[in-house]
Length: 297
Image (cartoon, rainbow, N blue to C red; front, top):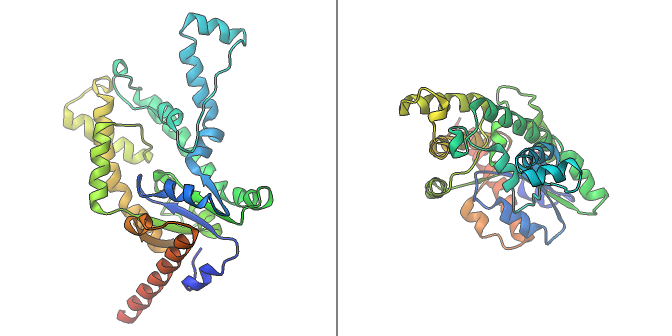
C-alpha cells in the first residue's frame, strides 16, 4: 500500500502496517509498544508455531518422550499430555524443531530431514502471511482494535518470488498493509554475526540458497559425508552468508513496494504518535526522492 503523502497516511482511519528487517532492529519492541494503544499485534512467527507447525513440533516431543520407558507407558495410556508452549517472546519450540544439519552425535539432522523441516516451515510462513487480511478483520470485528501491526520474521524475503508480479505473499501484504523496512547499520550486522557465533541457532533458508551453501561448505571443509559436518559450525557459516543474501532483498521490497526507516530512527519511537510521525516522514522522504529522480531523468 502506497501513499501520496505522509498526511494521507495520518488521515488513514484504520492503519495496517507490516514491519520487516533483520533480527534485532526493533520489530518486536515496536509491537510491544503499540500494543499499549489501539494496535493489534500479529506475529508471523507465533502464527507459524501455533497454527501451522504445532503438530510437527509436538510429534517430535512425543517421539523423544517415547524413548523413555516411564513416559512411553504414560503416553500410550493417555496419562500425560505434551504440548508446545510458544509465546511471542519464546519461539524456542519452533527453533528446536527446525534444528541444524550435520553429525547426529552432535545433535545434527540428516540433510534430507533438515530440508523436509525447512519445507514445512516455508509452507507455514507463506500461509501465516496470507492470513494477514483475515487477522486484520478479526482484530477490528472481534477485538475492537482500530489498527494492525504485522511483525514478520526475518525470512519474509525468502518466501517471495520476485520474478512473479502476482506473487501471492507480496500481493497480499501490499494490498492490505503499508510495508515498512527497518534498515540496520553495518555495525549492527557485524554485531548480529558476532552474537550468532557465540550462540548458533536454527535458521530458515530459501531452498536453492541452502543447497548451494551446503555444497560450498562441505567442499571448503573437505567433507565427503554429511555426517562429518559440525552442526554449529555450518550454522555460523550459513548465517554469515544468509545476512548478506537478505539485505538486498529487503531493500528491493522497500524500494518497490514500501518505505524505509533506520534502526536509529526506530529507537527514538516512544509511543504511537512517534511511530505514526516517523512513518509519515518516511513517506514524504520517499516522495521527494522519487520526484528528484524524475527531475534528474
